[in-house]
Structure formats: structure tokens, C-alpha cells
Image (cartoon, rainbow, N blue to C red; front, side):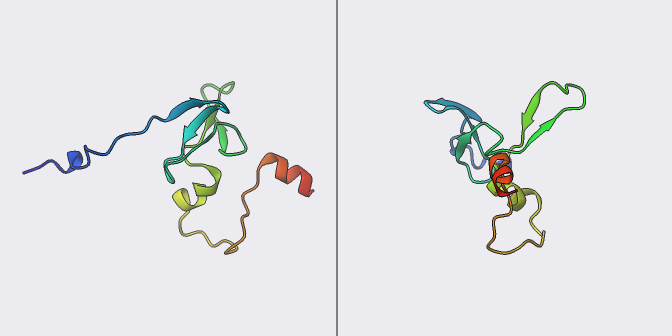
Length: 91
């Protein structure tokens, strides 16, 4: 009998971070694509115990609602997720 947790052992695991000519890029856990590691592509948060350090969410902004809020009623077809720069120019 095979172990269920090791059935997909042939699938190559991708590294979480890579270095490219654009800088550091992070792997989105939902779409499995690499995006630049900044607040334009990932939501940020601070840890209560280390408030000086900035952390980035595991899913990119496009996949965040799909991953963590799958049943949320949104405006269908309208991208309501905006970066810091898009919010400042819209106001």
C-alpha cells in the first residue's frame, strides 16, 4: 500500500524565491507563477512580535480573493484589487 502523502513525489517543488534581472521574485501559491516581490503584486503585513519587518502574503493580489475568500460576493468582471499607485491616481 502506498503512502498518500508521497504519491505526488515526482512533481518537482519550485523554490519560493528566485533572483532575476528584475530583482527578487516570489512564487504565488495559487497560480504557481513568479511575481516581483513588492507591494504592487503582494499584500503586506507586519508581525506583532517584529513590527519593523515587512512580510508578504503567500498568494499574489490577483489570486488573494480566490484563495482566501472563495465565497465572497464581488462585482463580477471588475478588478477591485488596486495597487498603491493605482489608488493614488484614481483619487
